[in-house]
Length: 395
Image (cartoon, rainbow, N blue to C red; front, side):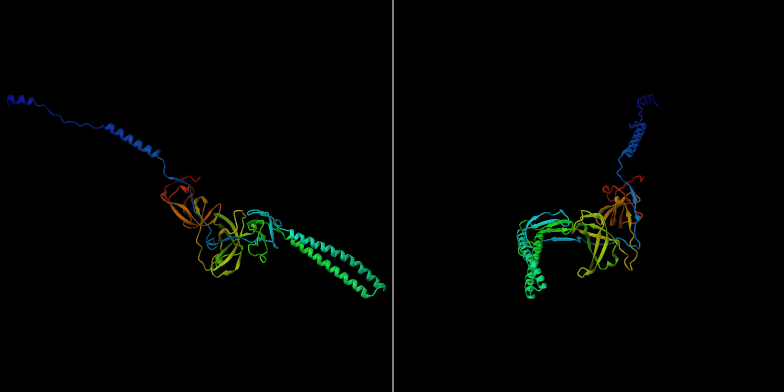
């Protein structure tokens, strides 16, 4: 190699590979650790979206062939003792002492009629009776004296007979006058209208100044009634039961009454009687049911439904098994309700169920769930179908 080539080689610049910039391994490790800590903190502190509930288990209720409460019938609350008060005589109303909703006692005066005419008639008959009494008092001793003289032979029998006729006429007139006084007194008493029994006024018809009369004498705008009272202690429920199932209802049997106005109120009752006639047009038989709980909320003519604790139907198979759950585990809506069944994955399923007897301790469910199903026992108003729940400690 020539000296010139060597000189050129010495002038060449050696190129070193360029190392590009980036995070150091230490920085990468630190960032990874920070991310892991952040994720762990978020998992630990992030709010739990599951709904906390206690869990209850549906238990087997009454079933089998012992009968059940699966026979319902509808009807109305009726009063066995109710009366529309009227006057026995025709007259103008001068006073009405009670309004609707007020209580009355047996024998109390509830209204008065104008008694001026009847009082005048009574006084007239009393005066006539006094006159008749004077005539009788005069005729009696005269007749007695004539009888004595006849016994002594001083007077003939014909003379005595004449005095006896006068005496008999005087006595008859006095008796007639006395009867007229009694009638006038009765008419005067009839101007006072009294309550025949304890009750509550439900309807007030007549007003002061109107004329009232018995139905036979009433006409035009004349009132035939003054007010209606009801004995609230005589309230009962009368329902129509299909004649196909009437054999399953027994007098004295237990029943539960539900009023449409208070559908969640269980009113205990018992069968009083089965009225021994059927309604041909409806194919039903009327049943009277006693209300065992007295309450001011129960009013005549309220619509009612009765669930009978029935005897088993002839030739019928086993009665469908029932289950009972605590009242807090059911959202009651009249004859039906809603429950939330807990699945194995912690998710609840919303179900509609048919309800039977409801008490303060338990609710009977006729269909929709079976014994052993686990249900949400509280917080139902916060649950929806498909929600995840957090089971709370049952203790």
